[in-house]
Amino acid sequence: MNQRPDGLTVPAAVGSDGDGNFVSTITNNRLTRLAIKTGLTDNGRIEVTAGLSENALVVANPRACQR
Image (cartoon, rainbow, N blue to C red; front, side):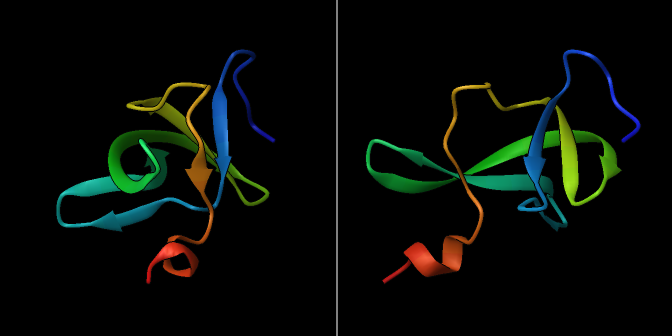
């Protein structure tokens, strides 16, 4: 992968719409949409350059969590 040594990556769980890129995370036991900025993409992984901490729980399939 084209990579940066300290880059934070997530599986291809990044959504995109007119407001930009986002991931779904779990915050206070709730599904939350979190705006992010992305960088390099390779082999099903996407680099996150801003908006996400390395300790965040990213939900790969948010539709599976909705009731």
